Length: 247
Image (cartoon, rainbow, N blue to C red; front, side):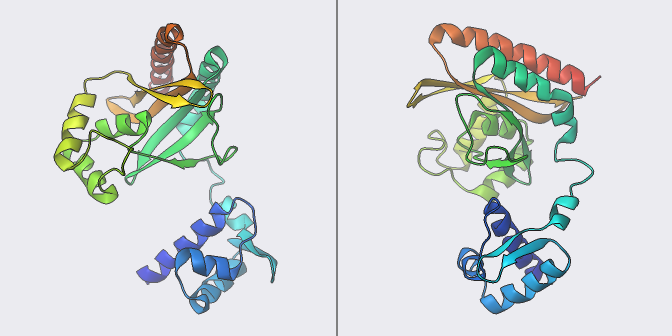
């Protein structure tokens, strides 16, 4: 039974990842490694219940209305997005940069709200985006908010960072050491080269009560003189987000 559920979820994720483009039975089989006979059986049930739609026999399948209907009572992270979206808009408006709210769930990082500026996302327009956990400043800040046991569980789930994603971390001991260092940092910053110039990114944790519920991140093309202004603005926006969530 569990195996059938896992295969069904694999199929639904693959169809959803096609971003509106119809996907054929052969493509689903290639993308999931599941044999066509099993896929056909699962698709028949999903089609019957409205979780997928068939464009045509040749073109294949897309996400169906029932799948969207499942989220009818609110999007993931609704409290943060509904209360604090205007804060991201302010951050974008005053800097021209990209502003996001990210959360950690089941060992994965998701961007639950964003306003694009200098950096745009491949799935621009999607309500929720999966994003890199180790490489990003928001991901690392979220990891630093975990207890030691929670952090180790996430590390064992995701494994050692790929080359270039977190150079300081080569093993579990390095990872724990890095997270301990990050716990004392209010705003984490990073600098990388970008085709448009020097990319400055930073992140800070957003709290509800004593619990970190999200990370707010910024990425933009900044001169060194502008970075102090951005950091002051990030601190101001963080305080306002925490105030709204704890009102």
